[in-house]
Image (tube, rainbow, N blue to C red; front, side, top):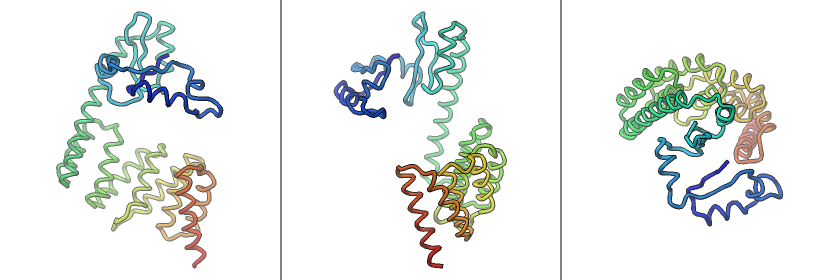
Length: 270
């Protein structure tokens, strides 16, 4: 296994000498594979860019015959790697899937570019037409629908249309805590909204909390905010305290504890 960086040798060497996430070990000692550089960018040009690569990290499996068998995110490498090693891998089928996926990515990038221009111009009609075209072409892409919801609600303030779509999104993503949490947080936390469908936000946040077993700090924080926006300070305190219990020591945890203190101060003044 070989990892390639597009940074210069000195930068990579300096990083590898630093302490890793394993106490007492540098990155050189902690990483069980070779890290190299690409000074003439030949690999970047002939492999990464040639394959349509855009984002990193990006992994490649080179087969016994010296041909690329698979391209993808390293988190997804285990299954194809096992198939390549045992000889059951179908490179032709994998190539067809990769090319189809790349075509979708190109089209999605076109949609995002056109949408950004429309939003920048504050052209609601164009933005909605672009999103509707994308949704029609990619009906299973929930991110496009979420973008439409967010724009309708937070940018163009088309509340009736936004919440109609919001109800559809909650129902179609009722087993996806991330989508539910994002939607509920947008409704409850976005400043300047003249209309907040807090019943919808409560439905989404409550279900997200059920799905995560009341142990996800971010979801609990959202649920507490929805209670707060409804005027139920007792409920807000209850869930924010639980969010604080599961919050880590980083910036997210600090933010959650700060909000808990705010709720507690308001409760004490009652």
